[in-house]
Image 1 (spheres, rainbow, N blue to C red):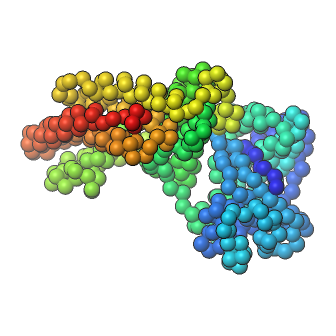
Image 2 (image 1 turned 60 degrees about the horizontal axis):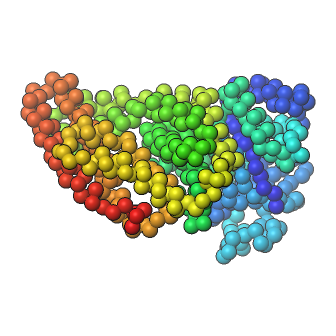
Image 3 (image 1 turned 135 degrees about the horizontal axis):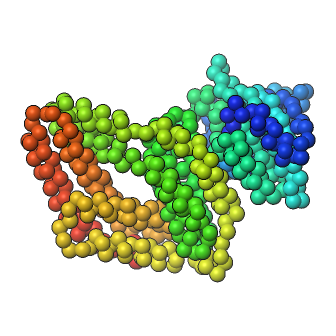
Length: 496
């Protein structure tokens, strides 16, 4: 068994010659070893290997064949870490029995899977390879160019892999930085196999649309808990970034935004523990500035959603409804986001946050204490600021709620990062009314946008519509004020 640990970077085929020259410089100008590789990937029709997060292939190089199984692993900022097992074979079809029996999970249906295996897709590419000395080992630098084939469908392969073979991961990250800044490489979170399954239409790539609580262990210390949270946030971001690259959509952009916000929340906690992450926080704030149009889009979507509270009423006014739809369409800045995702600073941030998760720097005196005690204190301190603001005894107007949306969301996101170590029932009971509050504040934004739209159209019933909008807003504010006072009576789950 070997532990594959490699950085993957995607390259524009137009940069192919520049990439080869740069990789040759890593190896002091040495010529690469170049050869052809064909990989056939196998699974069952119902993807039972995929369900176990396994990848099975037979690699052919000339007259040589090797059978490989890759087991479940992780991807952090382009660093792929997966255990793999290799066996030299003669046949073109795999034999799972050739692997050691102890690699399989309990109750793994080995013989049933073996019986139903067949080729799902294949890759055919030229590999250019260099070995660069590093520490007491080396970094294997490869450039792959070719294609993935599934039936009559194809998609190109053009990428760089930097595999750490007993060398220093810092050297691999240095090379990756140069590839990003010199030849506009992009951090890759999808393996060739993952792209092959997509091409074969055996899987779909859907954006993450809802964050979950970060899985934590009772014995985690502060450092372990926070780096698990950062790993989760980065994975969430990268997955949606892959979705954007595969098929641009507002849902993917929303997922990227949530991933960046979660990352920022964790970095803010690390900064308080004297980990040097201030530059990353600034970068994330700048990125979020480019994604601010999402709040306007969401507000307009609230007005036009067929299952929403306003769709039926607004459909009775065609000019107004059409204007809102046009504003919704014009609010989308997809090209801006795609350009942002290709920028060096964006790609460098993904890479370096992955390196941060890999290295996990910490101040031992500050981060070795048990996580639960620290998390209780941090949640209490953070929530105190929010609660004191929401507890101010007045009938809040729309601007009060809108001003508090960001702090409230930040506190709830901190809960996603460390809340898993507290009792589930207490946690959900406390969070539910505050999540409803967030939805209500977003509805305020929608009604504000509705008022703008009414004024911008030449509907004959403008005054009637403005009066109706005012009633809707006042009704919503009355409900939010009632909900706010009720929510403040909830006992925080960290003190339960």
